[in-house]
Amino acid sequence: MRYKDFEHIISTPRINRYLIACNGNSRKAMTLYRKNLQLSQELFTIISCFEIALRNAIDNHVIQTLGRDWLRTASSTGGIFDNANCFITAQTINDEIYKLNQQYTHAKLVAELGFGFWRYLFSAHHYRATGQNLLQIFNSKPRSSATIQYNSSYIFNELAKINNLRNRIAHHEPVCFVPGYPVKDTSFVRQHYNLILQLFRWLSIDEAALLYGLDHILTVCNEIDSL
Image (cartoon, rainbow, N blue to C red; front, side):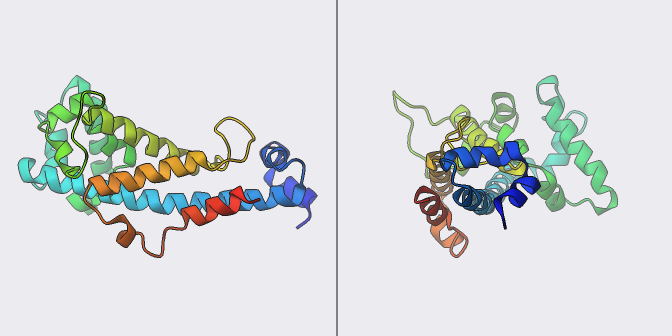
């Protein structure tokens, strides 16, 4: 496709970042745009696998203490989320239950709740509400030290990084640049990719086996770096 046609479809403001990053080389700019889409697809696959692993680990853990229908119970009157500090969480659960209507099952409800929901279970009020033991799902994480505390706040903040990247991809924002600048760089992606792999290991999941045939992140990053 000619660059002018490509620019017309994608829009000048959007493609201009890629053109600047490629020093005005329109052919490379189009290639970089496509490689960014490919990298976004690869990342979304990895994040999706992590999200499923995380929510299932949380669900399986909490079921042991709060029962098999714990989400509906927690959001009901008198439940652990029936308070001002957890109001939005309870409302989110009840909204999804309402949408499911006659199709409701606990498993379907778990699948409907987004990454942000599961992340917030590590926030202070929610962590206390569920029994202050949710960190046990990360049974292979390092021990805390005087310099770093691997507590619920730490996990909450690490999950926020992944959630923000997920939202960035969902809103079609580029991931192949230095954040905020039209400079080609894959460091941002590599850092977040390594974080996801680390959290898989802390969950005692063999990420290499799980992602076999799915993970091409470093290959695409190298292709972008070599443009």
